[in-house]
Image (cartoon, rainbow, N blue to C red; front, side, top):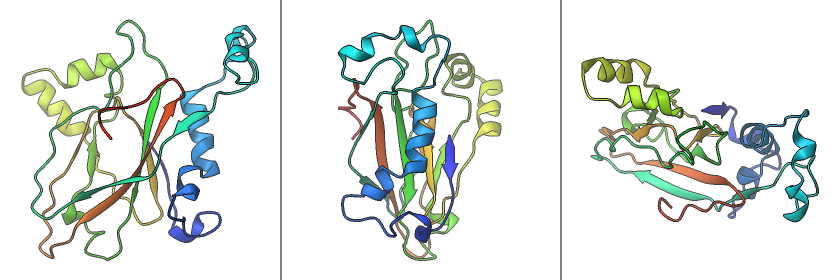
Amino acid sequence: AEAASGDAAAWPGGVPGRDGGLVRRHPIVLEILGELMNPRCAEREAGNYGRWNWGWGGPSVRPKLNTKAVGAVINFPGCADQAIHADAPHLYDHAHLPPYYVNMFAPAVATSAEASLAVGQTAFIPGSHRMDACARLMADGEAARNERNARIVRPHLRLGDAMLFDTRTIHFGLSNRSDAGARRPQLYVNYQQMWYDDKKNW
């Protein structure tokens, strides 16, 4: 997972409009995603001749990503821990490929209660986007459970922060234990390769 930090005023152009355009297409976010999802290989890219046929402008041009609309999920008081899961599968079992599907999370908190640790965060297991690590971490037994617990991270995002994560990463939403009745609203944006569309999760 990668994160870009800052306050709401740091977004170019100020507060995003209703379509979330400034969030979805923030230049720093798009630059990170380009490097992450379509890494360059100068020694070999000239041979990717099929990019002409797809209208991408030739072998040296990075494909554009399919940027979905801004959505929101809300964690209400009393919500329990979410089941541990990954949002998307690996495309092939025999090879680890760059991510084809990345999510961005950004908090939409408005009050100090909504920003507190008590409302819960999304917990991640770093390294679990790789199949060999995931198989070991998700195995039955005490050793795997201990390693899972030791690896878990719980990023606590502030208003204006954003976090990107490979959807093959194991994660789960944490329970909302707020005594103040606070909700945890969270914005999300899905970034996918042009040939992929998630018809299950969102």
